Amino acid sequence: MSEQGQAQIDWEAIRQKAGPYPLEAYHFVREGLSYTASLVFGESEGLEEIDRHVSGQELCLGLKSYAVDQWGMMAPIVLECWSIRSSIDFGRIVFAMIDGGLMSRRADDCIEDFEGVFDFREVFSHQELAAHIGECQSS
Image 1 (cartoon, one colour):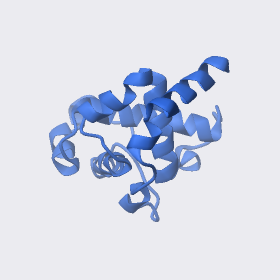
Image 2 (cartoon, one colour):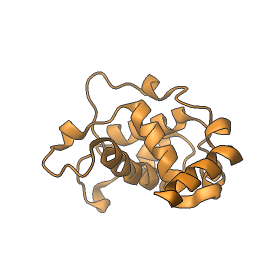
Image 3 (cartoon, one colour):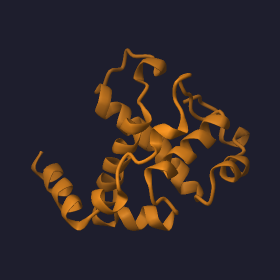
């Protein structure tokens, strides 16, 4: 992800490209990318950004965990309020931010990497959320 000043970011153009997602959803995905990279690579400070690349599937799974860590049982409600209802919604946000210069990609990355990664109803079911929250509390 490249570092740009907030004044240089054309959020309106990014939002028009991706769809009906509020600005908070973009911030969540940016923060979730860092969270996911830390899950995948650990606290590997010596790695360059390109060496800390995560796939679309890894990012979706990381964003799911990040949402539950942030909001617990409210995670699916927050995402629903932001019009995020499937993993492809994460992909639309990511690729709009790539086009806006806020994230980078590899040549073989494509939006289809985000399709059908998981079923939101399953991963955000009461049982799955309770199990995830229980795992976090016992660690």
